[in-house]
Amino acid sequence: RRVIVDAEILSATEIACKTPKMTRQANAVVQVTTAAGGGYTSRERLYFVFRDLPRLLSAYPPIIGPDTGGTSVSIEGSGFLDTPSLKCRFGLRSDSVVQARFISDRRILCNTPTLLTGDAPIFVTTNGVDF
Image 1 (cartoon, rainbow, N blue to C red):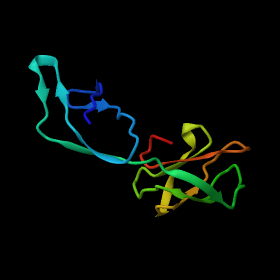
Image 2 (cartoon, helix red, strand yellow):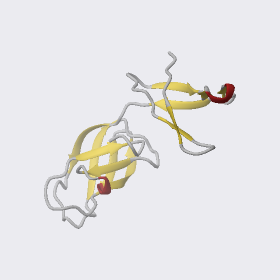
Image 3 (spheres, rainbow, N blue to C red):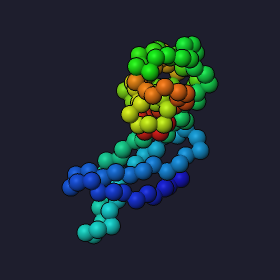
């Protein structure tokens, strides 16, 4: 299936494209084509892997900790990948994102950041963007 998306020009040598929504895991070939200046199509093919977002099933004790952070929380689910972009977010604020420690594709560990007192839902990302 061929999908065309718009690109944002970032500089003379960089563009950014938003991936389309996929309904299943898949590998995709990415090719860049321009219409300006008579048109251009890249010779190189880039490869992109669409993966399911991780699914969070549960977080294990401690489920309470100090607002100064540093409490290690074990998170179980599925679809975790051992990547530098594996992160946890506690609550909805972007400054509450912490690096996750990969244990397996079903378990990760995250240390809580400094937060205001109160409940904080936990979100996980394997690409650093989609929580």
